[in-house]
Image 1 (cartoon, helix red, strand yellow):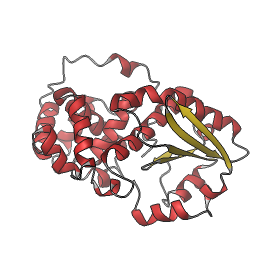
Image 2 (cartoon, protein in one colour):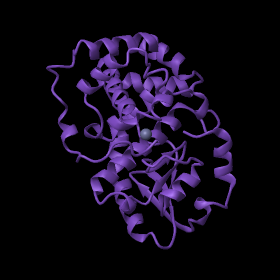
Image 3 (cartoon, helix red, strand yellow):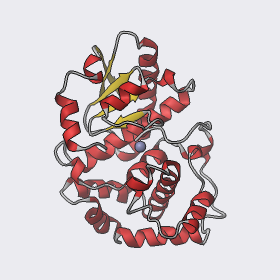
Image 4 (cartoon, helix red, strand yellow):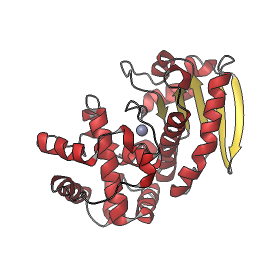
Length: 279
Ligand SMILES: [Zn+2]
């Protein structure tokens, strides 16, 4: 997510790191269109991203796929990424997704694992999908989609659970931080506790999907597209206010109601790497 003023600057400005990406590679993968923008030196990273984009489309199908073409920017260094998103001090940041584009730091600068790159690409494209299906180019920033839903959906879709705290860890966090509110203040808390917030996000999202079903989550996106903000759309389509859902989820954690629930098989596929790679 990014402030609207910065967004405008980024999209119209030809100066800066994005303007230097003059190699354009158009791709159509399972009917979804991408434009990969990179510089002349990034052939190997370009290939990595291309492969990851090929692998991502089946994962996106769970939510109906992307609705619009996405531009994928490949920047050579972390400094370029921070300059492009107008943020400093986000050492862990590897990518940044918006309505119809994603900016990536060259994967070769931080990992040698192709599966990790594939997960990150699917994670970021899930953000684009959510923004596209919940709003228009003009309204997506106004939907006030909270971190727990945004990141939970992306981590769940990209099968990145092994990167984040377990249900038990999240239950402990809740008990140890009775005055903090991961739902209401997720954005602020994630500055210092990103792994903890992303873990809770994942478990809350899984709880939501298991309890109410995938179709209701698609309905939630549709209700936002039709004009509601997140909170109103949630109440309308899920049938309970967000605060009530939060209470249910927190009770589920506190009472360890997850014990005895088998971890989904797909969580086992991913390798262990450092948490917190994209926003
Ligand atoms: Zn994210």
